[in-house]
Amino acid sequence: MAAVAKSIRRSAIGLGLFAIITGGTIAVTQVATEERIREQAARAEAQALFEIIPESRHNNDLLKDTVQLPASERLAQSGPVTVWVARQNEQPVGLIMPVVAPDGYSGNINLLVGIDMNGTILGVRVTSHKETPGLGDKIELKKSDWIRTFTGRSLGSPPHREWNVRKNGGEFDQFTGATISPRAVVKAVQKALIYFRDHRQVIRERLNEPPSPRERPLEPEAIAGKSSTREHS
Image (tube, rainbow, N blue to C red; front, side, top):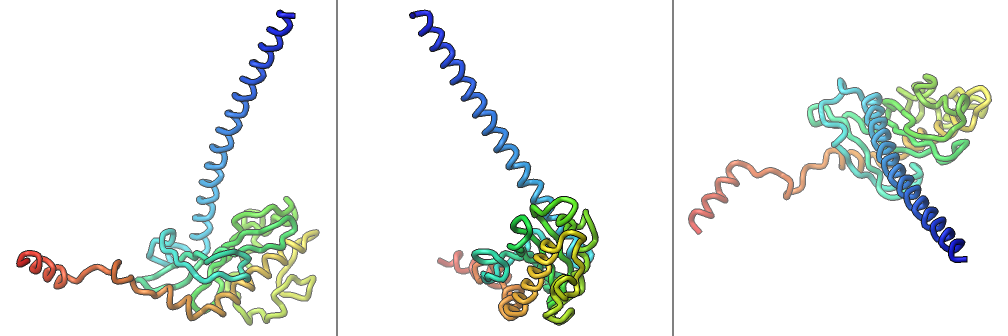
């Protein structure tokens, strides 16, 4: 009996050590994988930003020039919307906003939509999705040029009712065997344009908002005045 008990204890200890090592390995791998996925997503996002508004069309740091805009159900996001701002000689020439199409075939389709200050689309890119390979994934630029058909569009071009796929009487092509994915993207892009139209005033104000007094650099005279005050105090 003693030998059997000893054997059982050894087996239990062995299994316990195996479980600990395996669990630790999985945890480390998961953390490393998540970090790698975040890095890849960030690189893909940065690449998409510069595809939508190339560096030749702005001279600010697009990746760091961001502004928060009001929340809206139209963009299928909760909380304020952080957009990237493109400027030429400090004047805003366009913005890129994240948009979610919640009604894709396999769930959310995440987009970036670039719009100039007149409400015309500069470009659209899909940043992540779970659509069917070989069918719905043609919304990606690397799979087809379909996503480029939005460039130059605006509200009214095409008319409101034609912001849909051809199968539903709209202007935009669908894919053979896949209608849901492109239709979801079309509707999401239209909602982004409607959001821009409805918030045009606040967008213009925030994109041109001067720095706060705390952030605004002091004029040379003010600096000199402060130095003089300290010297005589």
